[in-house]
Image 1 (cartoon, rainbow, N blue to C red):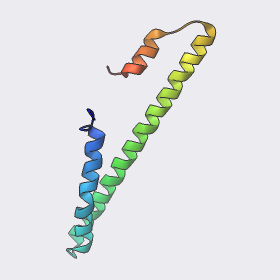
Image 2 (tube, rainbow, N blue to C red; image 1 turned 180 degrees about the vertical axis):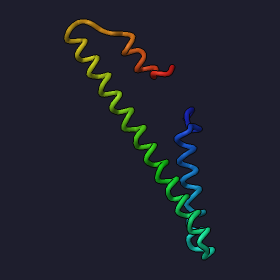
Image 3 (tube, one colour; image 1 turned 60 degrees about the horizontal axis):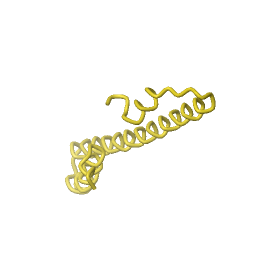
Image 4 (cartoon, rainbow, N blue to C red; image 1 turned 180 degrees about the horizontal axis):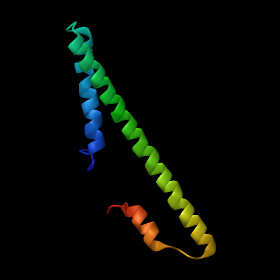
Length: 93
């Protein structure tokens, strides 16, 4: 519960808040400008979903690569602790 206010959760909340706005733009005003804003909102929501999925996929690939390092090095008896520790902390931390 300590990590509820995160950037991905904020993006998801913004997407959810955009649903009524999108519906209002599509169903409410019958102007070309409203249609353009609705399409722009839909594109932004799609990009947000894509970014979330890519970050999840990248994190899983990173975990698999680290597991391969761990397994390969354990078989050889030679650990590269700086790689393993850096991976668990994140590459930027």
